[in-house]
Image 1 (cartoon, rainbow, N blue to C red):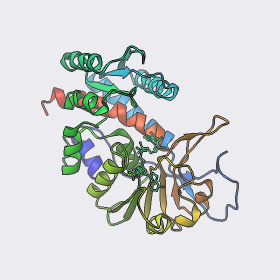
Image 2: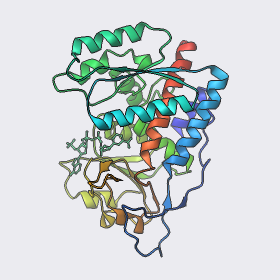
Image 3: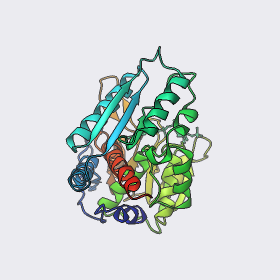
Image 4: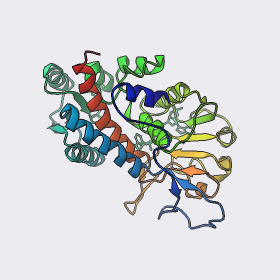
Length: 319
Ligand code: NAP
């Protein structure tokens, strides 16, 4: 795998098929249908744990890396995500510092000034600005003010360019799509020559996802809100990656029997539980499926740890 080659280049011991998929258990958000078809689970918790353990081992070898997290919104979901990230850093023996700015005090100029200070601080290896930002603040300007070698979200132009050029050894890759590729690789899913369909073309998930799949030699189709006959397009996928932010957008009739289905979507139900973009009945036809929760979400955090360590390592080696 190209991604794993790039990571091995930095000393991370990633090999394909290091994990075995287990039986998919239709969780509380799935219907308990007939189990005559055996769908296997791409368990993101297990894969993320593997990566986090690997990062903790690298910390012992290389020393701890340090992430600066900027939280400048009152969105409760953002606070939950930030808390998860900080906890994961602590568990891996890595440092993080939270810069919290209340939403009514935040200004674009103030954020840029803080980022410039962190850019110049040699003890900080990665800078993460939790999105979304308050209305009126230019997300693009804020992201572009982060030094490319500290852009551990991989959202800034420099890293986007490296990704699309296929220079994965140099790029800091966006955590969610890179996490999807790592998840597939760790469970031994072959992508070369497969038809991959990505539903969604956002800058943070769908587009980089399609780029990474291309570098893994998949044949890639990207669907979006103007795509016609979405079900038909999805049915052609050997590997279907759904990141539309629309609950239930893919149901079993849109899935080729035996396909690999990765559900990136994340929605909170009125009862507080989480579900994805993919209809629960998809497990009746898919060959491999990611659960929600416990699929892509944990991989995103694990890849943030890895990116921060990589950022420190790349800087130390002048790359
Ligand atoms: P986004 O910025 O809203 O983009 C959604 C994409 O889906 C757009 O490209 C849109 O097409 C497309 N889309 C919307 N409705 C569609 C339809 N009916 N048919 C086909 N395509 C459609 O969302 P995002 O940031 O990419 O996130 C997508 C989902 O992933 C969300 O549920 C989000 O919460 C989740 N997410 C999860 C993680 C994680 O760690 N698990 C991380 C990031 C995001 P257009 O471009 O034409 O508008």
